[in-house]
Each structure stands twice: as C-alpha cells, then as structure tokens.
Amino acid sequence: QLQFVESGGGLVQPGGSLRLSCTASGSGLDYYVIGWFRQAPGKEREGVSCISSRGSTTNVAESVKGRFTMSRDSAKNTAYLQMSSLKPDDTAVYFCAAACDVEYVTSWGPGTQVTVSS
Image 1 (cartoon, one colour):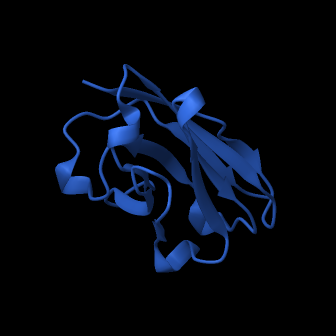
Image 2: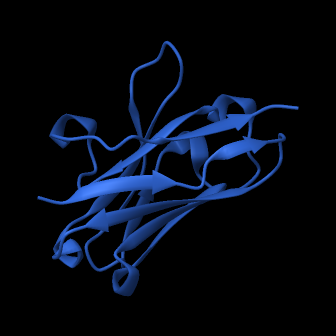
C-alpha cells in the first residue's frame, strides 16, 4: 500500500508562493491518481486538486483555480502543488493521497502546515 509524506509548507505572506511536495513510498505510483486536500481549523477536510495517473489531466477546486497548479514526476515518485497568490483563507494543513475525493482516502499522511499571514 502506498504511503505519502507531505512537505514544503511554512509561513508565507499574503500574495506569496509555496510549492508543496508529496512523496510516495512503494512502487506503482504511476497507476494512481493523486489528490491534494486541506483542512483548516474548525473546518472539514476538502479536496484542492487532483491529477490523473499519467499527469495528463488535472482538476482544481474553484477556490484555488488560477492560483494553484498540480504536477507529478514519476521518476521521483512525487507530486507537487504549486501555490501562488496565497490568501489567509488558504491557511490549513495540506495532505495528499491516492484519491481525488476525501471519502475514498483510507489512510492519511502527517500533512504539512501552510500559514498565510502578514
């Protein structure tokens, strides 16, 4: 079973950028979609972006459309979430998993904290 570790979070000012990484242990990542999710304090976990197994198709939530871009590098067993024009509302713990919908995720990694604040 694939396991994921997220990294790249931190404190950034509004309007800034960050790139999150999602690295998978185990083989066969190419066969899976990968999704990024986030959970803000007091809110439910929500989907942010998802990329197809071959990386040809990506979907992003309306709230981040035009600001977040997802990609994957099969050679590195890693997926990325490039975030720009960050807003305080983007503050959350970000997670990745081999699914595009929260209800299909059976195991979560530790996540990485993103804080957007001046």
